[in-house]
Image (cartoon, rainbow over all chains, first blue to last red; front, side, top):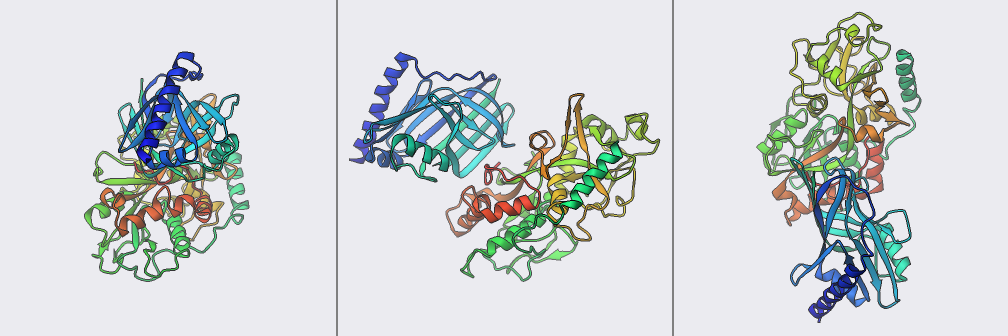
Length: 196
Length: 343
């Protein structure tokens, strides 16, 4: 049953992804400096099943690329659109292409975040809600968190990824749910930034 | 004008020296021999005082006497120390480099972590993890009312430590004609290592004197030398002055922190409102201070790994507890949300 739920979520994500790709409604609107790489946000099967059980679905929108693995769960890869960051110095910002759509089917509410980014100052994955201008901290690297730097390549990996307290409050308010909680484990994070 | 600015900084520091005091009273070396399962560290002078405070406050949260407690051995005085029950006696590590060497030369039966005020270097084993504690910065200092100007560029500091600039008049013809005395902390100092990197790793000239304990302006070589130039941890300075964490030996003496000239429109000022200035911390003179652990132990699922992460990890006490946060600030450091990240 749980695998079926996860598959349904993945299938739903793919379906919505196709529609959104056609509409072209989710492009990042920042003007970043040259950099490449990607951020992979993984949602564990445990989180997926819990979310699905509460009617919550999180869908990556273009230019993010979704994938699903029955063992590791659902992943969304966001391309790096620009960066001025020192990951090992903990300052700067990485702009990511794509958006994130949160839907609560139980309440019929949704919220879309554009301008997805990783803020090294705040050490959070952030997003600007549609119609807004201020980034909301969404996810915090947790567990074993590691940064590396080799030449022009910087990486960040986190064995766990937790919902930020402010992000949880914002999402619960927007979706009219109580599903999101501070410190809720979502999955993992992998970020690679290559300065051009 | 430059003397006025330096005096203002000193006065401000003194005026606020009693304003902020951390929760408990920190101790230096452990008062009694730690148990074998305790988490014990050695190394950096810069972070020894805040680790003592963090140890005191962390241990106060523990109700199980057999739970791993946190202890930290100071960088000085010299001599042999037995760090915990069953440990191999070791020469007391003085500084980040010496602490990391001790970590790698022993097992967790003797050393669990090394305090480090420098980042990973190419010569450090890949099996070490540098776990972020907080942000700091390093600038240069000089005696209040002395001959040094209020600001120097990285290039000027490089030339001073290379001994190609030896007289203040080479910096500015209006400065007194006197020989500059570039001084550095002892060789294993992380602050020394970081500072030299920040100014471009000059080939040290013969005019450079090595010797004083880092972050201690009361050393006879520094106390009244109006021509001395000496690197200083901004956090440690703030801890000693604003935080009131000063002892007769661990004190700024007559030194005041000086600025870094970058361009005609940009001079980096290390302290604003008694806190490390953000753009200074995010410059090449800003640094992260760490606790270094063995990777295999950091990622282990056993009791030792769990204890390490419970103290130093992103979800651990230091990175999340309000008392720990206050301790870091009281000792002048900038808490970072990236606390607990391995580098």
